[in-house]
Image (cartoon, rainbow, N blue to C red):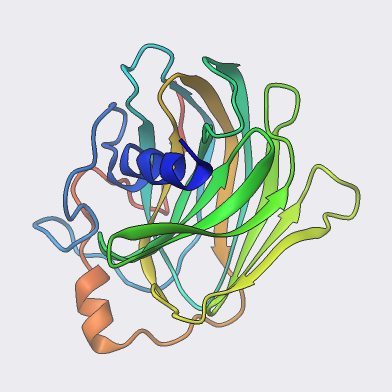
Length: 235
């Protein structure tokens, strides 16, 4: 199985469709409007700390913890994820990652951690493709400590484990498949025990106006997703 095939399988089993605090397969249309509280679509700050995800015996299922946190043109997420144990360490096995700009279940992005590199995957009309990569080990000894910058359809990844936090990924989506998102999802794949030391997101500058149609789509928080202005702490 090549890396693209494994990535597709990993993305199918992980992240944006996992249910908060439970191991689950993707639920269709998790990010679409549904009955629940109505929240502002304006980009806002969120944070999680000390969130442990133990998928050692999950039967291959990933564990994701999404947070309702709209992102717009200019948004930043600082994160620190570490692997505590890995079942089968191969370069094709995605270890964990983060869904961002998730506004519907067809178009969004993933930041993915592998043993030998990190990558960004674009999901366009429900088809996932790894679109940008950078060589960077992520394992028990090398933590995923990054800053993700979203500047309209340009995405930059800084390596905070290196002095000066150099940019290691700089990619622009010419399709701009997901200009806005209503949630961020933090996940660890099946067979891996991981811990999110923290993830902190915040808008930078003045939030851009959200088109009315898009605002209506992302105004409702999916059930089971905590509101971003509250911290989510692991047990």
